[in-house]
Length: 278
Ligand code: SF4
Image (cartoon, rainbow, N blue to C red):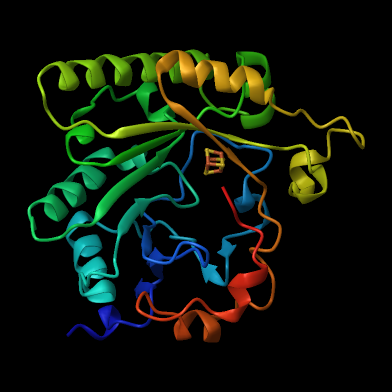
């Protein structure tokens, strides 16, 4: 086996890039790091404080893995054992900016029908400004879209998008997904579960300092959760409220403890105190 792809817990390093990683409180889920490029600059984004995340360095340094490399990395690290329940595309960037790559990986996983693994994609939806494809939905189980705000003004304030009319792009994306979902449903075909998500920014001390520096204490914008829930339910979807990360940079998430982790292993003691919950 290629030494760089030798299984070592739940992370796979190929060259300078960490292609797969994990969240301690998501046993059975393997995360895929396809890009660190993003069209937003969210004030609450953890990458403002650097690429380390639960002891894992998610900087890709322009070494973006291709689909074959990702599939080989996933295979090497998981062996596709039954303990692997979910593959999640989510990193310190927008995975659908690499739409063709993500689609190819999803197709490769689905071409192994013996695998019962679920596929989830977390997206901001901003890729929709330039790429209007939805065929990926045929291959995944869950699409999680960051709503993040109840209107354009607050979205711009919280997410600082690089593209104009970003909230409009997001709404257009959601409407297109809804139409696609209804079409698949009408034809009796598989369609994924769609979830919207919002980050509860009310605990502002856990927002990276660079994200809150423009605001005085107690003035940081907070999404209207009830209004966000109404938007989600108008689409017929659920809303997931995410808490801010507070200890993903804690020293206990050192490489040694990560390497000791395994999809097959028990949840480590360090996980008990982790604040990461949806
Ligand atoms: S969309 Fe996600 S990766 Fe991009 S800045 Fe916002 S939180 Fe960070």
